[in-house]
Length: 380
Image (cartoon, rainbow, N blue to C red; front, side):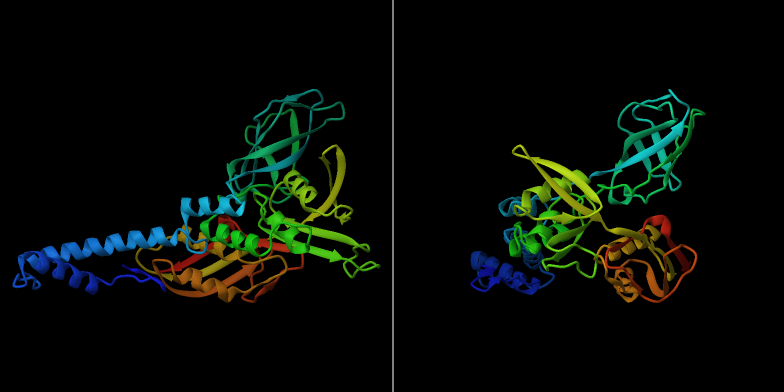
């Protein structure tokens, strides 16, 4: 058996062929010709291929019993035993300020878009008041992290009407999330095993990472009797979050914070816990959108979209306050089909001035990019 006291031992193709030939001679006689090219030799090769195939399937079944090697549905089932579930894709939410003709009724499902084509639909009917103003909550049409667009970008009507003069989202859209990958789910499960949800700093971070859509958390815990260097008052907790919705984050904090814990931040939420009004405060990390110019020598099978996706995958590994090291992008690119050589990589924070130097994020900044922000220059 491939399963031993030392774990699973994979059978090689040569060993599988020897095993198949041995079985044929055992059942048909020791003098049976099982040499390569003979009739029984070809049958032995077919049996060997099946042995290897079955061994691979059995090994996958074995590996899917363990958190660090499981994948797909098997990982989902193991996650249940840890008390966590895979994060599902989620729509982004934003609040729009609208100006226009007093009394005009903006129907639900009215579409608003960004200059880059991200589409959002209004949740409810809303009427422009006597001062010419209206506020409405919108949700993205696509469930994706890429729909967490910057503030002041949802500024267009998909089907313009004269009664609406201007549209704007004063705050960044939030809550949009991709379906959690096996890699990210595995990492989150490992965090939960080593630091379960509890009122400690590590436990609070784990609790927030378990909120759907949250990708990064930074916590400043000032337990001194004076204001710290970041301006946090004495005996307070200041939490910075990337992703998730405000309500989901507030509900989780109300669940996990110790009684009497004082939080600070620009976002304040009231949560009802068994009839008690719990006030929680936190902040959103600042989003820094990066643009890239990548110069590549290409060959057969090159796919530009794969390059752009690789850049996004690369950025997802950086936490708030990290240094974005451009050299770490090269392995992501060289694993793609059709790339002969990566000639240069440049990054920009404003889309116009590019540099080949690494980029240091501020303590509460996180980096992201979108397909439209990645320019691929090819030579082939």
